[in-house]
Image 1: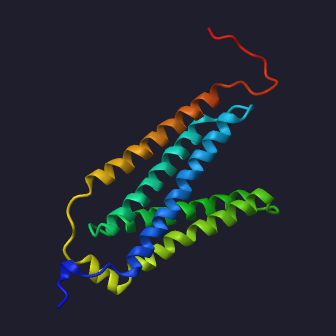
Image 2 (image 1 turned 180 degrees about the vertical axis):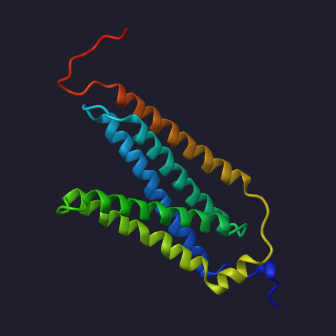
Image 3 (image 1 turned 90 degrees about the horizontal axis):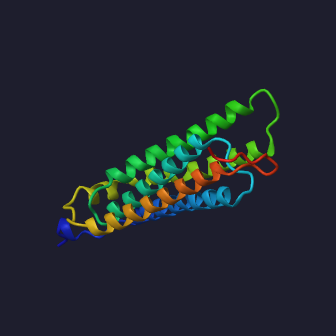
Length: 189
């Protein structure tokens, strides 16, 4: 007879966690790619504030997705992944709204179409995760006894993503201090 603590993890839980790992990895990979791209560019960075906010925000969202997936797989809680998925869906919706508002009144540029496509593609992940997290078998499984512990894995993920966010922010600050190509060099002081 199946005891509630030994119930097998439903496939929906595994699928939701794997989707969270995948999308969190895409976000964190995007942070690395964008930071290296800006740092390697010869043009410098025009406005540091929005770039740093974006790096820290996307890093935090990627971390929340990875930690939420870990939490669900460890049978500890499903709420962190549900919350991260809601924030993810909201961020994708804001991206779509911003692109839609800035492009209204004229034809969409190629960059606008790419941003809309990216926003729609990224919106599929959180919607699918929320549908999976609402499955009755997953809800019943999530209501059973939870496994304790997991602080080591959480600490490792948080430290790794914190280092990524810090290094990316430093790269952006250094890129902002570069003079654009062709600009007159101004000596410090």
